[in-house]
Length: 544
Image (cartoon, rainbow, N blue to C red; front, side, top):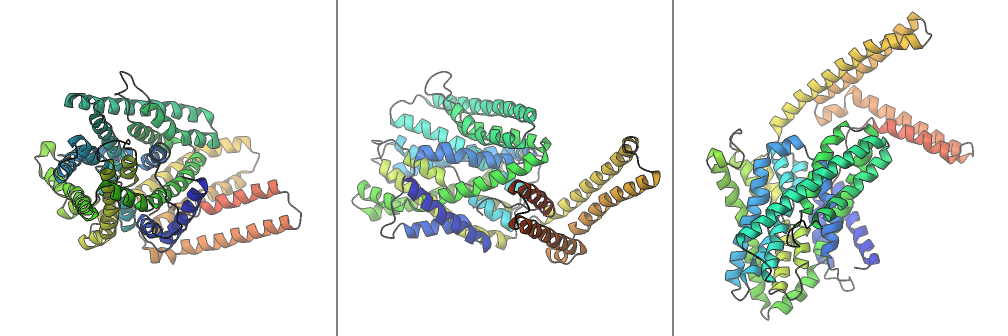
């Protein structure tokens, strides 16, 4: 792909993302639809996915960012469901789809059919999570969806390698394949945790927010490449780069809770920007694959209509496998139930939404594009993979919001619990500040030569600052969005922003008059910017 073409695709995709965010539209769907339409426009260059680019430069940072933002406690609590959906369901889907493809195309070797099954097995939760976050899905369901997306790519790509080895005549027994899977998981997780511990130690010693963020940026690429190129026994065995990235991200994300505020703020901004950049690009590339897919379809069979019908059958099977699996595993005996014995079985509404979140993504297309030349059924694999990826995205992605609203799957109970927990946290923080203030005052008085009266006034001001922040936060917790906007605290924030704006304009006027050097200007502006950022507690990310 030419660099100029890539920049053009990225620019248009980012424009569509901005439009979608402004009008609360699902950005992935908008980008894919526009890209599909643009692929028919004469003069639009054909864009072919580079599987190495996607799997090495795009997938690791996206997985790492998701892992950083994931709660390790929630991941552990939902681990049974995550494994059931992210590993077992991937294997089941690959086998069922492979069998159906072999029945539809008897001339296609079973190993090639299993390659296709592995290619279409892993759902991509970007769209589902974006929709769920916007519509307020329960946190438990969001944790399952996010966790599934972190591990299912590893399971699918390992199956993909095993199936390709079978096609090329290099595969062993079923036990050999299971051993490959086990080694990939153990090595991948080991590499990720080791890298996480090492990078965490280095970042703590640096005490430099900029360098800490730089080290964080290289982590996903480094651990992915190291794990994938680690062959302890033979070329057949290697670590899972995906699991290495996930393990490192979960560990460092948990450690970041104890990092400095500057590092946390900087990391949040960096990864939020990278998420939007990479996700807009991959969804645009998905839609632009259509001309190449049509060429492959012409090369695959003289009867395109029959091949297209078969592709739609594979799409239907891929969607259908997930639905009964989710309900059946939830209804199993307690010992093997999807959500564990310690939790009540989720409602059918919850399970219905979970069963309809199987949208496929760019990993499916990248894996299909990476099938070696000369592989039996390569053209059919790429066609079916495209139909499944785009079909699930358009069909399930457009209907999922309606399904969530109709079934009323929301987090109302969680909102009440969050309100209670936030009040408790703020009260604990306020009391801790007061206790620490009482401890500090004697130390301050011993080092500063001020009168007792002035010291009392200083103490009153500091106590008043802590109490006013606490009272303002508590008052805002239980208010609706409309009430919060009309509250005295909101009026104070608006007034404070106006004052900061006036200060910023005055400083810029001094610079225009030649009274300030640019270095001084940037220092003052940074202080004003940080003060304004402190007035806001929201940060949006992702393309949704």
